[in-house]
Amino acid sequence: MARGADASGGQRPLAGILWMLLTGANFVAVTALVKHVGDAVPAPQAAFLRYLLGLVFLAPMLGPLLRAGIDRRGLAQYSVRGLVHALGVICWFYAMTRIPIAEVTAMNYLNPVYVTIGAALVFGERLALRRILAIAVAFAGVLVILRPGFRELSDGHLAMIFTALFFGASYLMAKRLSERDSAAVVVAMLSLTVTLALAPLALAVWVTPTLSQLFWLFLVAFFATAGHYSMTMAFRAAPLAVTQPVTFLQLVWATLLGWLVFDEAADGWVILGGAMIVAAVVFISWREATLKRRVTTPPPEATKL
Image (cartoon, rainbow, N blue to C red; front, side, top):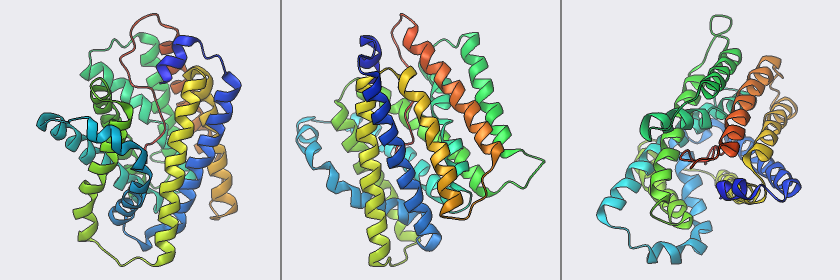
């Protein structure tokens, strides 16, 4: 969908920016709600409940899913993707209980960078020098955020690194699956397989949730679904080169939210590192939008939670 917008030149840039602003608000709401629930519910269980409660939003996709006629090989591919994505979701939920919201948000921007690297390794996509330099800037931004040797790193930071790796692998698999099945089928199968993959992990650490916790996790599912919808609308309305820079505001909002609501100190280094990563992602997106060749890299989207 993003590629179609790119091909058409993005005839509604203002609409794309507004949709992406709404996307940022939705995803910041997701992080705030998960932070509010905290570690009262173990990460695998919280992730499972988020997806289980979110199945209610799959109703419009049941028709295309039933008509898809997925064979045994396709089912195996979807299952592998669901397991990989589930591991990424667990890491993300765990990181949210260990490090500030702003750091989670900033490190989340690495996803499209890993997708770009993976596209070169898996699909044989050429990495020009400018893209390599952009990737180097992105990883430099990570070092600015983490500042190893200058402060203590937590297991939450390590979890976020694995989050981006797992999600990057998931998006590369989605590229292959989307060549065969419709977007509705790919999204629906992801939700179903992730729910199933998380179930045994959730049961292993199960803590009976309160009605209040179930309510907050249902809201997580609602805002995540709304975020994916508004992001899709943004990609339809304008090129990635227009919409991608707006995602940086998520980091600004997350920093303000952490400071005002969760008493997390605003960290200028995190803002600087996040800006470096976003600048690299914007450059990669702009290059992909302007090159007159078939795009094989999936569009760099936000974390699919």
